[in-house]
Image (tube, rainbow, N blue to C red; front, side):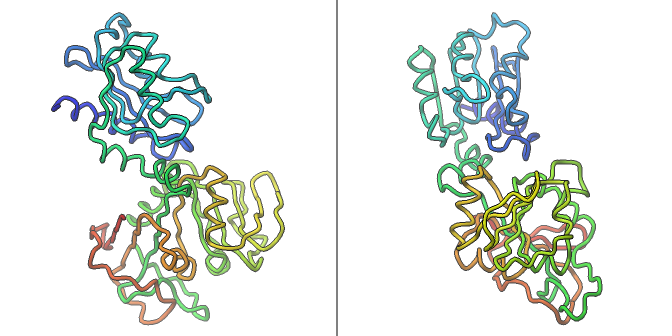
Length: 340
């Protein structure tokens, strides 16, 4: 059992390098062990590429050892054709007898089918090893398939006295959070499938909503704009990433990377994102938009940067009790995190 946990943790470790790159596929790492020695490792790098099991098997120099080895993987091997052939077929081909699995795949196309196929072909299969940790590691994938909506992160920064920005008549620059906090925010952006803001944020700040402070892909940009107020010269219409405007306008494709989708209720937003196979969204503001998600209890994680300076007046941040939040120091700032 000790070895099972050790190698399952290694599966998660190697898969964590690919966070943000595998959508709509999950994060998967695979380790192959022969006589308590790792002889192969692999992870799923990006959507459309080979899966973790295939990469791990291909990394084994002496394939004759595979039939005497144990394969560890943090998520149930697939048993259906997609962009790549089923991983179960490859495991069976190389006669790997012992399979240790962390999570059962929640995707209805798999959901226990991979385990059953391996068992029916004579494999010894153990599953549920470090399951809670494996489930949490793929929380975006599990939320998407189980709740039929994206994983939702609410994120904002506020001054020591609870303001998120100056009032409209005083738009002078007031930096709430420091450089380390801003860089961490951009790291989070590259890890998520999309980023959502309200139209007032676009009007007031004209943000780019990119990962320009770190190396990594830009999230899909989503603007909640029920009354069609977004300025056409806004930076969110750049070619850096795709942009979706949720508006009361009719559905239309403005350009290759800009799309207008008719918007009605909050539930519709999540249905649209689900249908577009968007597995996660980080909601960055403003207060009115974040409050919509809070009031409807539509969130999975809340992350708040709190600066050390008072603003004295301005736009108030969401009213929230931080007593149950985990507190972390990020440079001179405080980061408060709460996960459901």
